Length: 213
Image 1 (cartoon, rainbow, N blue to C red):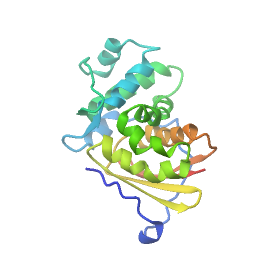
Image 2 (cartoon, one colour; image 1 turned 180 degrees about the vertical axis):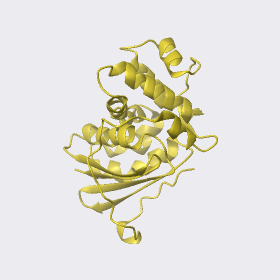
Image 3 (cartoon, one colour; image 1 turned 60 degrees about the vertical axis):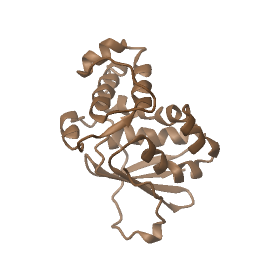
């Protein structure tokens, strides 16, 4: 299971990451990302359903499954399904929704809706919904949500100042510069606060992301 502790900054001695703006002109190497997934990597069905529903304005569910190379099926919200299948569907959805843009742009846009999709569930309301629009509290507790919906990788975080949350993704090849950046931007949008997301990307599976608000 992914780690969910929100470690205080003073307890971690790490090199200062080199942050930059996330890019939407990067190529999406789906095969390389999937090769980095551990055996049995899974995610809850709510994120399949969210991506499929959002893509439905541009492509039917059956056509999306064909484009993704996966079997068309029903996804139950809190059942586990292969993360590799979700990645295939997410890329196909991004391409369908943003045909004139890059898949990276489409993935980031899809990520911006993930927080609201999680809040639409009972456990999402219990875990994070009670925090309302308190961006600091939501970001502080965000790693707990990752631990609930994923069964792999290590996602931890810390408050490095009153207005900056730092997330560390380890062994998690889950579209870090695109979808995951969008997830954190979606938190800011939900909380109705202006902010900025910056990334220090090591490779496809490892990064540090700062959220200033």
